[in-house]
Image (cartoon, rainbow, N blue to C red):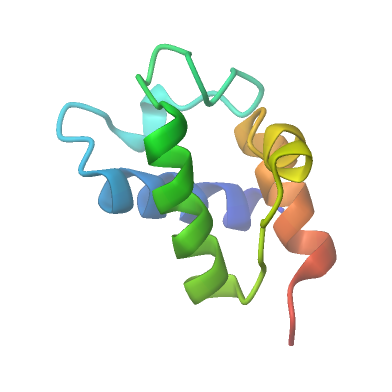
Amino acid sequence: MEQLINELKEKIIDTLDLIDITPEDFKEDDPLVGGKLGIDSIDILELAMMIDKEYGIKIDNKELGQKVFSTLRTLAEHIHKNRKG
């Protein structure tokens, strides 16, 4: 799971072009949206598309999205449980 969390940190930085953010700036249990990373609802849409493309997992409703994108850890747990292959 730790490897997946570290992988997600890199992918989030790349996907959202977070220039001043390093993987060390991410804390697994900090809020993703509205937290110190500055991620907003538009960014979440981009992340949802990246998750679909990279992991084959669709996050296609608001309720699921709010739960899955609450923290980096909840995102990693969702991917780990639902990953294909």
